[in-house]
Image (cartoon, rainbow, N blue to C red; front, side, top):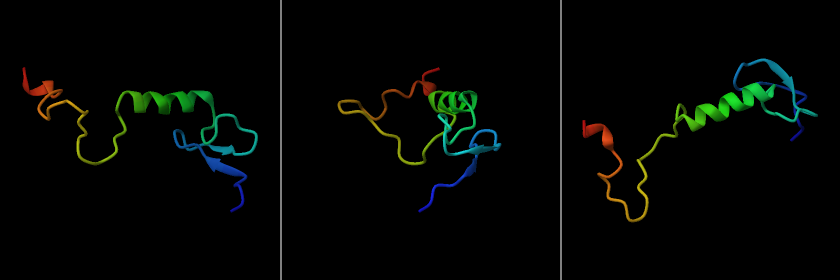
Length: 67
């Protein structure tokens, strides 16, 4: 599969070069860090069952109901 010459930044949708771009697939460090921040703030979620850690009860960690 050939490497694309240009792609769209997933954050701002601006066309950007693939080759020689240290931030690819993003157009800039700003877009790259913004995307990382969105993952860290849990703005992006992968659908599925809520995972529990070994040794953790299923009702632990859900403090929203304890108001």
